[in-house]
Amino acid sequence: MDKDGKIKYNILKKVIPDVYKEMGNEMIDSCKHIDSKDKCEKSFMFMKCLFTVNPWVSRENGTLGDRHFTKERFLLLFSRHILLRSH
Image 1 (tube, rainbow, N blue to C red):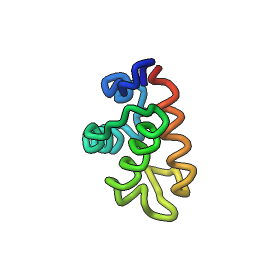
Image 2: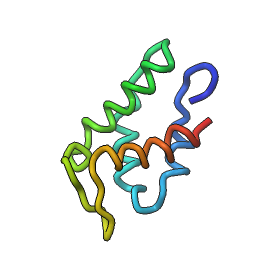
Image 3: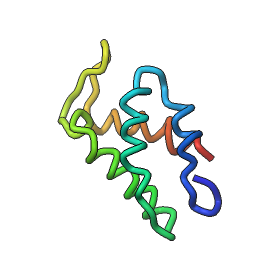
Image 4: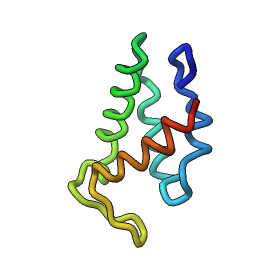
C-alpha cells in the first residue's frame, strides 16, 4: 500500500512466494474491489476478503505441497510477503 492508500496489486503479485503464486494471484484478483479511505480498514478488509474468497485458507489446517499450515500461520506468512513487502 502506498502513502495514499492504494494497494499496489502488481507488486503484491511479484512478491508472492512460488508455492503460493497461483492461489495468491487468484485471491488478489478476487479482492481488488475492496476500498476505503482509511488505510487500516482497507488493509483489514483486503485481508478479510483474501481469507473469505479461498476455501483452502478458511480451513482450520491445510496442506500446500509438503507444507502443513494452520489458517493463522498461512495468513501470517501470506500477509508478511504480500502487504509488508508492497510498500
